[in-house]
Image: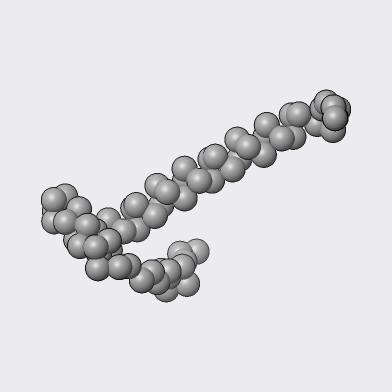
Amino acid sequence: MAIDKRENSVHVRLGDEDDARLEFLAQAGGSDKFKVAADLLHRALLGEGYDLIVAAERFLRSGSSGSNRE
């Protein structure tokens, strides 16, 4: 079952400088500004999600038997 893109729609307000940078990236890559924005957000979320998963795994591995020194 395909998900309608509107269900996953995200609206972001950018400052003028950030919007100009996004436009520049899109023009340099010969792409649509909105596609570039979606790709940048996707990559950022992958990175942040990965960092969070790694931190959670490290925390779980440390267990409650960690040192409680004062």
